[in-house]
Image 1 (cartoon, rainbow, N blue to C red):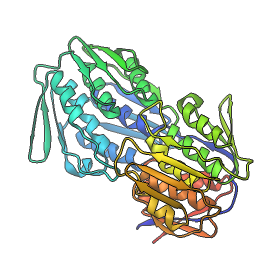
Image 2: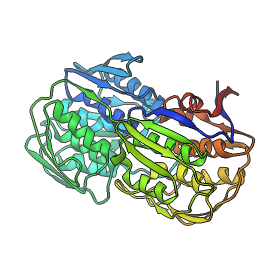
Image 3: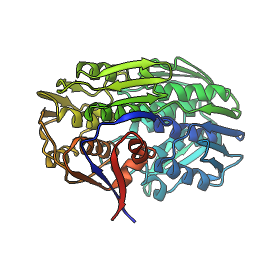
Length: 422
């Protein structure tokens, strides 16, 4: 049965929200089970539909899975493997399944993944993944809708220069290289905290990786990896979304476990908007005492720039600012699909090329709106928290891909929000 989110706007959010584990680390971290026959224990794993989709694929491949929901813990063990093929039914649900390529080729010498379909927010090319595996010595063919990778004699270390920054491409290359013979050097690697944390996880399994957190990562291949226990870092995109929720409702929220440095540029932007941001021992306090929000121009960029995954949410905030702001999207060509839905609620946003001009309005009105992707759904919920009247966000399955219990977390801070079946 399909669900929608119904929101009665106009209530300030006050209280504490615990930030869940990062989806964008949990997914590659889960895949590391394919690199060892030993047990991988992951703590602070968020309860998300994307996590369950990947668990379905891992179970199909032959992974033994134990889930401890009470303690947000996953116990994974892949002693051997039943299949080296990821069928279309798994890949169509989530593009992150491409991350099984590197680990399976590294450990088992072969992997096939159904060619990923389209993405609502734009093209996410996998050619950089394929090129990296070829440089490592793998043979790659494509037929019948599958990417087939084979390295019967093992992978060999090499130098890989990425022409553009790619997060999953960096992660796939790292996981392929940890069991390769010799040393691999990644140039123009992604700087995201999730990539750095993945390297730390692999090192705790016996890998030899240096340079994580910088644009040049060196991986000295090892013969075998062992099991480990690892804590998933807090989700910076979830934290940023709730920071905007506090700002847009003129509220005061403590974001428990939020790591300030992972959102430094974003928080500095909110300060320029007139929002109070205070780093505390175990999180960040976000408060808005101002009548008007200052308009600020932003341009999305790879980390440590302004995250594209926070662009839609930030647009909801700028929609009620005291002036005009320009929001430029540099990473995905279709990431303005939330604009028409915000305009249905009374926002004044126009698009030219990859830039949105947002003229702030005094009020938004509740309406029936439709989510087109994960972050767009969050944007519409944020707008609904501010709007007069009732907002109903349809296609709710998008939000459950990346936000754990968002309705319950907002309810406990005073939001009038609930799920309804349609």
